[in-house]
Image 1: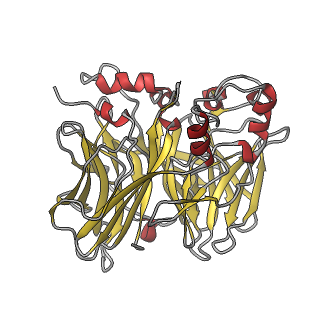
Image 2 (image 1 turned 135 degrees about the vertical axis):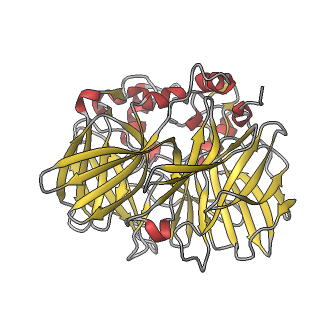
Image 3 (image 1 turned 120 degrees about the vertical axis):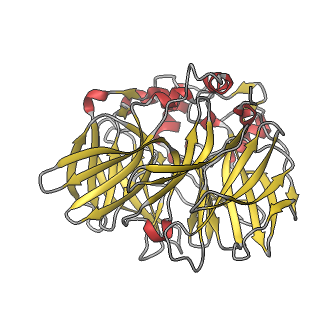
Length: 471
């Protein structure tokens, strides 16, 4: 029986900096820059045990490449949530599925104030001009130094209590584009841009809503914001007074179906609404315009059961269950084809291979037609392979090794590349047998190993990050 992925839920407390990791194989000479990652590293604070994978205190990781060598450093994100937890020896901020005991007044303040939400940026790395941000689903991204990983405080406040950690970059201006939910007596969805120089957010569209849906990401085309409301919704009036953690106030209402709205990026006006079957997704893959139609691709689940799967008590059990009797819910590449002329929707599955944590050749293909998606495939208990899916025919190739659990693969294009898949994939792989992790470098076209760099400790299961050519 193989070793399980459960090691990835073991806390990592040590912070280190190493100038030269042991490398097997040969790193490409053109690969210069840094892979920056964030994710949860600790799920216990004093006597408090956090409840969900999404709740852990954030740790940053940096792999820097130069002249065929790679260095590594990791550091806890020095957020207000982290400092308060260390100082008081307990959780003080409201996280995804863990909420500290507070008075009704404190709950109301936490709900209706952007400054009372967590700044525990454990989901993704954002780029705003020359700034690097650790982001979560709150209104408070934290800026940090890409070399030292030292935090520099909150970069801006989103115009709402909830936001996404999956912003887009405006090709024309370099501004950051993102979504926020403003909760209150009159709730609304808000799309906003953040200027790369001033870091000031500006609302460009506001859509009223009675029961806001939980949305982890959104789509973008050349002319449209794509708002996909899956039927996991909340009543804002009861959110502050329920006494339940944030996500446990949301209710699955499949009778609502999936609602997709196109919002004009320039005018902020609604350009069309569409109704599809009930689905749930964390991640948009890509969206683009195809003549008069709009194509929206997501990694879709049948329902929102996956959120319950990722509570730590259940997740430990899933990871131990090598027979797969109680498997982690799987997502599939799913396409919505929207026809604004008659408001019709065609929904189709692009591949039968389960896939999550999708990545594309962003610089070349974002908002445009594309062919390849890379991501993580899964066994019964956890993500145990890297996949490349050809959406033209749904076929896939895979990389995997026994007792190894790779994180999201990040595509880095060859600087002189011609083909869409010409470049490398960078992934952090947890080796459960050796109880350490390593950086894996794959040929993005073939998924053949090029090199790996060994880290002297394990890196817990984490979420997202990106590559910057700045070393």
